[in-house]
Image (tube, rainbow, N blue to C red):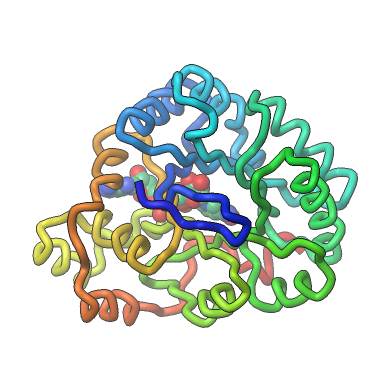
Length: 271
Ligand code: NAD
């Protein structure tokens, strides 16, 4: 599995499994077991997904050494602020039943709360309870405000990203700041499957559309966390290491950009 290095040296397996809307029961256990068998070592959850307990159970049942796994969770909007974030973190740790978390993220920027929340994130990092800290859904102006008076810079920014929402400028800003870019809804919640260019590229490379899009993420140095609960699709999404998309085709995918979201606008949500 290819990894992306954060500025503090932590290695992030570049492809992970997202578990939003995967439940917290048998379906989740089967999906995670299929993912671990396939080779996934990176799982993306959040307190908002209400399945940290199920993720914790799957980790502990997997028999995989904890150090080989990479677990992300996130502090929800209602829990932001300094003291509330520290409390929310302890709740997540207890549910995940793990001695540490690999990556803890601020789920959304909440106006007026970002800096206090970030202070709590820095403290958790300095205490060694998390291996890395970052943000999610932070646009350039949110990052600029945070960078003005943080002691530790975010290591990663997790954002909506797919062929219709490429955000090249934000990618470039993150690159300049040494903040890694991570894609949520990389398959546009299923929207990529009807894009004609992607159908053509899938035929050209003898791969599926999902594999083309995820490979495009990998070649762009972006961490990606597609969601599926179906073992066949979980395996398909992981089978992207044996081909290379040509530079001209990478550019054609980039050019699909329409600035179109399937999720909320970070400037409107969480405020
Ligand atoms: P996604 O783009 O990963 O799409 C998931 C959909 O695509 C599902 O319906 C799934 O069945 C389908 N799919 C997956 N693989 C397929 C395949 N090979 N063939 C056909 N269909 C396939 O959308 P998502 O779940 O919104 O995003 C992925 C993850 O990102 C989430 O699970 C979550 O962990 C994270 N996320 C984070 C935020 C945030 O605010 N930080 C927001 C949304 C999602």
